[in-house]
Image (cartoon, rainbow, N blue to C red; front, side, top):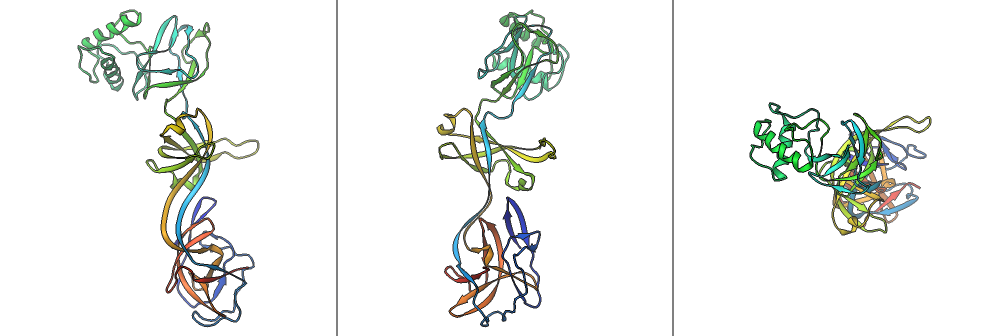
Length: 364
């Protein structure tokens, strides 16, 4: 069966056997049916026999490469933003600027002039850490302390007396009370360095638990693009895409993350389900841009050196399947074909005796 691309959706053409009666195909294949303008039964001769009249138009079979590609709008930036939510009581006394990059061990913001520190890790802080505590958050803390140069403990998931001693040294260096306990809200775990996106608080403002202080992103340039849910086949992690930058330069990107998102409707419109893809970029051309609108071409399949005809050159056979009307001088004959990839108004075909340069009929 052949696969068609229509508005970025894949559809398949059915094929059955039986008595041959030919119908012209002047439209696009949808859900195994043929939507043809002026569809009607034609009085055609059997395949290989002269037809009563020549077709109203012709085309030539060509050999080329077809791509199952969908192009969508994308946004070049730093990816989705996460929120830093305060857990401390007091007054916000220091905030970074939008665009600042914060690394491991550095203050993300300050409450009562005490730093809330950025550390690296995938498990969010959700409790006090003290002697006897065990878990992945403990392992995150110990791993960061080790990277920051503190030692005398084993990096594992157990908070021991040795861990508390290292924490006291760390607290002394930060100007904090040397309690050996990391209270909830003292650290924020992120996957790596962060870039401050927007500020949600102001210096001098009272700080309360649950208050959003700022939003942050990663530091790597990424493209965010959304596809229709029917085009999910195109968005696979690890697959390469082509990104067209402002000015027309093309760079290669790699899909790093795929998620299903709900886009709220506007006015009376219903919400839409979209496939959101994050695409990483490399190279100086993308690095030179801060934020920009880009075009992203997703390719699911590539068919090299195949025979193709315009979709309008296909004729549907009543017994099932499709064919082309080969024009030879003043006569025509019908050749059954197997269809492959549909792309850009053309379709891949294979059939007995067909070759590049063969002339075929088309619907008017």
